Length: 351
View 1 (cartoon, rainbow, N blue to C red):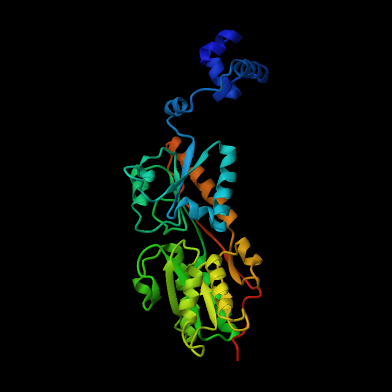
View 2 (view 1 turned 135 degrees about the horizontal axis):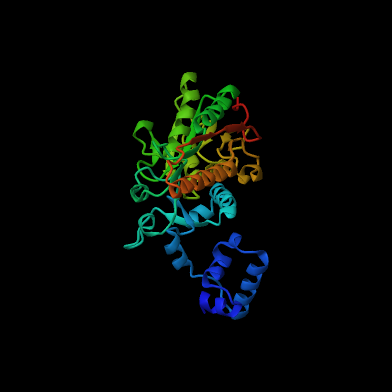
């Protein structure tokens, strides 16, 4: 079944049938409905997508590059909300969404081999070769939760002030023994004595800097534990390390890189017969749906992940349009606010 078959049955040209599928504005609604009805009667579903993409020079899809496995991304409520917002923003454009891992599979390197019109690089390992492959392809890109780069649109959250507010909240409550539980893909794990040697992405660097902005002027040197990124048990294990020392020396409050890590911290504290917040205050980051489900509800730093997804997808479609029109892409850098949300997981330290 071909376009010509439909054209012969309706009594129009092949181009008219093609326009019914790909350029409906060129036909009257009556003519288009007639052509589509005949196509449906004959079982014709439309032009081959691969051939149409070749003719247009586009794929009709954009990629999202993730450091972690796709399974881990779908277990993360922040990542799934972000991906959902992207998909919603792309719906009117007709662009599809392709999820890419940064890990090669045999001879296939997704960032190099998957056809796409552009890509969002989302909170990726700074040493990932996948980012370099996408840059070398010279397709439209948008960095999200990455170090901004010249000529590349970027969408970030104001992580450093948000983290600073979280740490200052604990200082103002009277805490002086404060721990930090964070995570990272590569580099040292366990207790960290020197944060300058940590290999971390943009977000982790900003949040650690924000916490230290408030703690060090107060004369507080936090105990820092860094665990592998993406493991559900990392928060629990991090808290056990911090709380394993003598009760007189262990932290009275813990700052966490994410709400997911904070959940593990609270669980570890409860298993050690510590009450939150009477014996231990806990602060997360993200304000995911998990934060309000926890008991007690979690004090955290809110980022508008839906706004971040919409903004990132909109910036990418603008860059794709610019490339198609041979105009310079708008190298915009958008910084979204982060806001401390105080709930029931923080209180003054025990006497």
